[in-house]
Structure formats: C-alpha cells, structure tokens
Image 1 (tube, rainbow, N blue to C red):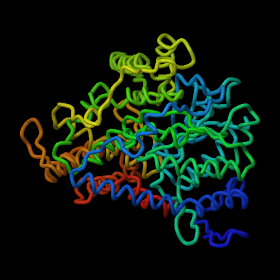
Image 2 (cartoon, rainbow, N blue to C red; image 1 turned 180 degrees about the horizontal axis):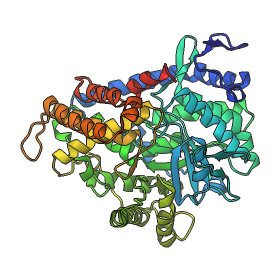
Image 3 (cartoon, rainbow, N blue to C red; image 1 turned 90 degrees about the vertical axis):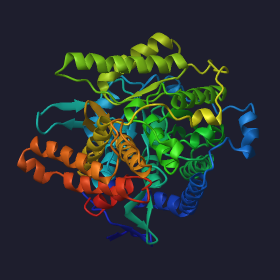
Image 4 (spheres, rainbow, N blue to C red; image 1 turned 180 degrees about the vertical axis):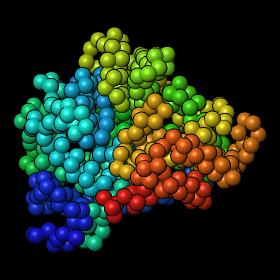
Length: 535
C-alpha cells in the first residue's frame, strides 16, 4: 500500500504505473477523499434503506406513487435550461473507456458518446486509471492510438460527439483506495477524478461536465448526487448548475419517482433515459420472492410488452412536462459481416425499435456499435426534424401503478434457459479478464444482460418453474445445461486459449449466483472481489 503525503488515513492499494501520477495527484486525491468523507455516510444509509424497502416487498407490499411527494408530481415547475451543445441528442453511442473505443465513438457521427466506467467496464485498477487518462487526453485533443497488431492509427476528427461520463453506481466500492480504513465509493472516485481534472477544460471548449447516473432506486439517492454536485462545483469555484446529469431509469422503483428525481436534480438535470436491460433485471430482482412476478423467457420480454411500454411512455410524458429530454434505450445489435440475411434481419429490428421510440416522442436513442449510428440517425432525422420533441407533452399517456408491474404472457423454454446460461458464463468470463463489453451471439453485451440471465434462472429455480416441455427448472437441469454449454466452448477453443480463459471461474460464480438461497444484489460485487486483488 502507498500512503499519500498530506492525506492521513488514505492508502492506495493500486500500483502507480507510468502516467498514473498525473491523475492521482495529491490535489485530485484530496478532492475525492473530501467527497468520500462528506458523503459516504449518507450513501451507506441509503443502501441500507434499499434493504428495508426490499423487506417490505418480500412481505407482499407492491410499489406505489409516494403520497408524501404528491405536491411535487402535481406542481408546474420545470428544470433549469439546458446548454446549447446538448439540446440535440438524437443518437448516443455508449461504450467502455479504453483508448481506441473513445476515439471511434467520438468519431462515430453520434450526437453524444457516453464513456462508461460502469456496466461496460471491468473496474480493474488499470481500466479505471487508464480510462481517466484517456478521457483527459480526448478532452484536450491529444488522444491517439496505434493498433499494435495492424499498425492502424486512430485520431480524432474535427467534428466529434459531445462527451458524457457514467460513473459507477452507489452500491459499488473502489477497493484500491482506502479512506480511514474502508474502501471508498466507486461512484465518488469516478466522478471526482473526472470532474476535478476536466470540468474547467470542458467549459473552456464551450461544453461542460456532463454525466449519466445509474442504478438509483429513489429520489433520495438523486438528492445525494445533487448535494455532491453542489459541493464539487463550489470546491472548484464553478457556478451551481454547471454540471448536467441524465438519470438512467433502470430500476422498477425509480419509475414510481420520476418527477421527484427530476425535482431533486432540477438545477443539474439533463433528463431521464430508459435503461431497459437493467430495468428488466431490477423487476426480477425486486419481485424475486413473489410467485405472481415470474417472467417468461427474456427474449419474449420486449419493449412492446405492456409494463415496459408503460414505463417508457411515462418517462416521455414526465420529462417533457418538465422541459427536458427523455432518452430511449439501447439497441444492442451489431453488424453481422458474414451473413447478409441475418444482418438484414438484425438491422430491421433496430430500425423498428428506433421508429417506435421516435414515434412515441423520445428525444434520442442509444446504440452500442458505430455501425448502428446511421440507422438510428436516419430514423430520428425523419421523424424528429427539430433538435428534440420536448414540445410533445404526451398528455394522452396515463400510467397506473398496476400498469408498471403487469406481467407479460409467454413461455419458459429450454432455448431460453440455454441462452441465459451461455450469455451469463460468456460475459462473466470476459469480465473477469478485464473486458466489460463483449460481443455474444451478435449482440454487444454488458453487465445488464448477464444480470438478467442469472436472475431469471434464479427466479425460475426458486419458484419451481417448469419449461414448456414439462421439465422442472432445478439445479440438476441447470447444471446439465451449463456443462453442455461449457463443453461446446471447450470444443471450439484451442487448448492454449482455454488455459488462459476464466471459464471455470465464471461457471463457479454463475452457479453460486443461481443456486444461492439468498439472492445476490449485483453479480459485479462478488465478481469484483475476484479481480480487485489481482488488478
């Protein structure tokens, strides 16, 4: 461990490799440690509050729109005006913070690039600190990259996307930085380093420090972020409202507090986003002990199902009433180079998805691959000729609490079980090797779809669900399918690559997650323990 001069009680467990000291300066560390000491107690209290809310749901309580905040929902307030460079966000691309990805995403033709320290980045020390270096260089225009295999060089175009950054969620620790003997908050670490080093440089370029905020479950968690923003701005001598943040609505409980979340962040709000995959995971997780809430195959739980369509339209109505953006969800498809028919079918799905979003009134959408930017942009250019659709207030949308938890019809199949297992172990294996954004079965996967996969199998086993052919989903069936999927992988992977892989570790963790009597809140927590000590 490295003790930091002038910062008693602070220790670094991560190595200080070349270039790292430029990010981990005493001043920057002093800033993030100040955030930790001021706000971590409330963060921990709010995480404990999640447990009490879960206990109430386990006891049979169903979510409702809070009565004590009705005056906020019924009020006529709006959020603060948006900066000019984020009025038009029709296409947003997301991805991890590695150097090549940042260049390609900023050059992709998208309106916005969301650089992700969360679900598409394994939070190894190397990934996190090099990600901060890469973003610093991108903002200053000095970033470049040469592929060591091909020799191809990459640099920024003259016109690039606007940069947003997604820090880790409130639940994730940063084990490589100990403050007063405890791991600091991953959220505060990611946010603090990026803001400290780049806020003033972004403002000098005519942009600003823009963020995405993930995994929140209540307006109280948004309030904490707002307090962090106020403190951070004051510490750097910046006006209140300099920071702008879009909240991902990716938990079922947050959908009952949309107005309240915007209210808490009203000085700093850049709207809400439909984080569809984590939303499905959250739905399973929150109602995991309820027989009535067992979902069919995840492939059948599409954005056209009633509860997801209700949620997405409620996001639009709420945001537009408050004069701010309602962003659509992710298209995870990737171009299929060697199968024209399969590629045409995949791109048709993307187009239909984006046409639904634009037609409903979303102000922009997400894609995971640069090849999808032109499709998404064409759809929004055609349906949304202005910079956004905030003037479409969607007062026709009326959503009840029952709408938000209506279970879709569907089946449970061996194909669904097998796909969940294949995606789960495939993603976890790559994550353990430090890769958090993984192409699997012609989709670009991040932690969210792995979370759905393992949560759905846990739910089916917990409630003694049967497949449509009558077989019980129990540990015996799960293990048999997992062994079969591992066998396929072993047979198609050469011996040297298999020896370097983490498939055995991934399979063990996956089984622990789906067979445990106690549901693990996030797979990234036990997975992080497997990478933190070696990173």
